[in-house]
Structure formats: structure tokens, C-alpha cells
Image (cartoon, rainbow, N blue to C red):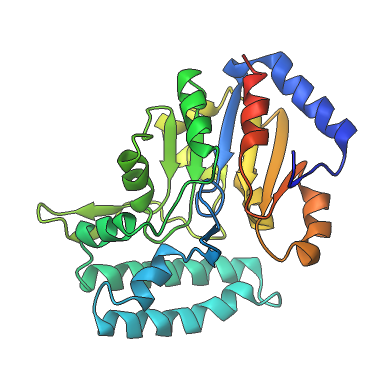
Length: 281
């Protein structure tokens, strides 16, 4: 199991044992998408966020790129400033997302722009993830994907392209409403941003919440310490936390060891997850 770090093997064995003992019917998976289910690097080049692809590679207009960069330059420092309260950050991130979404609509974002991004291989599954998706589907284990992506529609589009958009997968992200010509005309609510990305949002989406509320054993998968907040507000019984530490390993490993039960480094594969899931049979 190269590139797998277990900070506390005794604790991990105990949590895994409890989850396996309770069975698949009491279990669900909660995951981030970008750089968790997908690779962080393709051909040794860091994968960009879809927003940055649209902003920097002239998929839309020069005017869109200019205004989008101005918004990023204003709001990103607020997002990362430790001196600013979480209350203020949440309000400002809501402002940023709403302004940017409106800008994309004004800039005539079309589904064809998103198809172009997908067809140019800007996104690629992490090795082992397709097998994980197949397994969860066969066992009818819910997978809840929570993503604050500004172009969340790419997630179901990408899964559908690879024939992995299964009915056990529930996606909580920012989705657009489209007209008959494929133009974005509005945003679906609620808006998900980096500071409200947690399972409390599920209570606003009853059809998903009903699927998982009694499945209190959870595997949480993310690529940042912030992804640990996805479980906030959910009444879980046993929680298994897996973190992908894709870069800056020496600098971040200490904090990851404090917060995750399993750490997978160097943008490696999902084999550990699949081996664990097989034990749920």
C-alpha cells in the first residue's frame, strides 16, 4: 500500500471494524469531487479549477475574463484572511458566487462551453475511482458528492460521459437552469460556496436526506482540511476520514495526521478505499 499513511492503526482498525460489522445498509460515502474523485495532476501539470479554465483560456469573452479576475482579486483575499470572521466570510463568499454566476449568465455561458472543457480532458478520474463508483452502485450504497464548484453542472456531465451517473449518486453543487438553446439563464438554489459546504445542506434537499439519514456510518473523502466540514450537522455514528494529500506533503502532513484516519499522498490511487469497501460484502 504505497503512498498510504495511517496515523493511528489501532483506531483505524476499530472504526473500520464497527462499520463493517454494521453492514452496507447502514453506510454511505460523502466526497468532494475536484482532486478527490479526480486527479490533482495530469501529465505532472496541476489540474485547474473549471472556473479558472473559463476565466483564463478565453472560452467566453475578454470582458468576462477581465471582470471575473476583478472579482477574484477582491474576494479571494477575504476568503483566505485568518483575521476576518467566519460570519463575514460566509456573507462575502455568497456575494462573490452570486456576482460571478450572474456574470457568467450575462456572458452567455452555454452548455457547449462545458462540453468543450470535458472533451479537452481537463478532468480525469483518479485511478480506482471508476471501480469504486461501480461497487457502490452494485451494492446500492449512496454516494453524496458536495462541491462548491462554480460550474457544478460539469460533475453530472462528466459522470454521464463515462457512464457513471448512477442513481445512487447524489450531487450537491451549483447547478444552472438552461434554456432550449443551452444558454444559462438562472441558478438553482441553494448556492454552495466554500464555507457552507456541509451535510446540513441536505436538510434543504429532502429527497437526498431521506436516502442517508439512517445510514449513520460514513466514509468522508476530501483533499483539504476544509473538506472535513462536509460532515457538519449530520448525526453520524462512526466516521472514517480519508484525505488525499496531493502536494506540499512535508508542510501539510502533520495537520493531516491530526485530522484524517487515512492519508493518501502523491495524487495516488483509490485502491485502499476499494479494498475496504469489499469487506462490507
